[in-house]
Image (tube, rainbow, N blue to C red):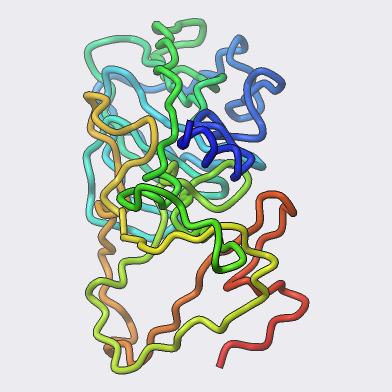
Length: 282
């Protein structure tokens, strides 16, 4: 009952993974519905570069090609050290370049299920038009936990005393915005040796309804619904640029920003400050 009450205060449920889903919409691959079977042709033994661009408005996809390893070679146009994976999660507007070497069969399914497991886009890599491979079933629908919401290890969320304060910064990949470890986002500040840190400026607590007292980097977490699924899944910690930092200097200052919000008012802010009333960061 206590857990249910916590979800109720957030106006959410453990299945609240997306606002847009396959019960209402059809997911497309290059403008083609799953039944249309978009097909890309290859020659046996050929190495093929596939560029995946998530052009959706609000949907995160989990992408795999059953029977084929994918080697990720670029992320958002930046070349990286190659990473071999079975699957990756792609957030809105992200781009991943992968290399595949189809061999041993005439057709492979390109399968992209949404993170809520309500629908999918699909196409085929084949040696000729008209072929198709088996289309996988959707994975089981994942359930969010309090840890996914940034409240793990606390026992309970602190809803009072502070006038609220829900720090959404750990909600990675959430459909609609912030990200509850559903996609793979975040910056690694652990290695940053800053000589001085600018603390967040107190904002309007009326725009914050809950707050997590402890956050942690989870760059090595592939996300909700992808953990321990038996496949090698890409995580942000796998992405290492081929290029050195062109600046080369160590950071001299750290600015910490908290993504905050109020679920009942449906208001989102940095440190409780709305964009219209925020002063420039100095």
